[in-house]
Amino acid sequence: MLALRTVLGRCLAGPARGGADIPSQLDDLPPTMLKKGYTDVPVVNSVDDVVKRLLSLEMASQKEKMKIKTQQLVEKVRRSPSDNGSFEVQVAVLTARIRSYEEHLQKHPKDKSNRRRMLMDIDRRKKLLGYLRRVRYDAFENTCKQLNIQYSLPPAYSRRITKRWLVKKAFCRRVFEEVQKLKAPERLKQRQERQARARARAAQKEKEAEAQAQAEGTPV
Image (tube, rainbow, N blue to C red):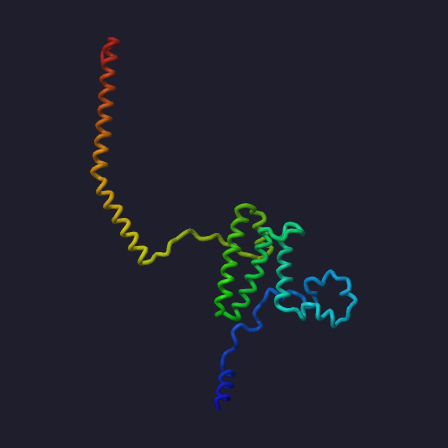
C-alpha cells in the first residue's frame, strides 16, 4: 500500500525542476568534434570510426566540453596566439564558468555553495570589466560584444537605512549641536575682536590720510 501511494505521488507530482529543455552554452558544440588535445594528431584521421567516437565530444564528459567552450571564448578576445593571461582572457574564462553555474542553478536552485561561487566570479568579472572600461575602452567594447555581455554601470553609493543607523545619526547631530552651542560665546568674542581691529585699522588709515593731506597743504 505504501509503495502504491509512493508511485501515485510521483505520477501526480509536477514535472521535475530543471529538465533537459534548459538551453546550455554547450549545445552549439558538434558531437563529431574531437576532444581538446586530439585535433592536431595526424593519426586520428586513419583510426576506426569507433575510436573517433570515443575521442569525440559525443563520449566526452561535461568537464571536457567546458574546456573546449572556454577555449572558444578565449579565442574570440585574446590579443595574440600566445596571450593566456590578459584581462580579456580572464573575462572570457569567468564568463564560461558563470554560465555553467547559471545552468546548474536552474536545475538545482538550492545549491548555495555554487551560487556563492557564481556571485564571487560575477563580482570579479565586474571589476575586470570596470578596469578595462577605464584603461582600454576599445578592448572593453570588443570583449562585451564578442562574449555577449551586458555591462551596466555600478549604482551610486547608497547606505541602507536601518534603525541603528538612524539612532546613531541623531546622536551625532545632537552632539554636534551641543558642541556648536559651547563654541558660540568664543566665536562671538573672536568676531567682536576682529571687528574692533578692523575699525581700528580704518580709523588709523583716516588719521594717516588727514596727516598726509595737512602736510601737503590740501584741504581734506
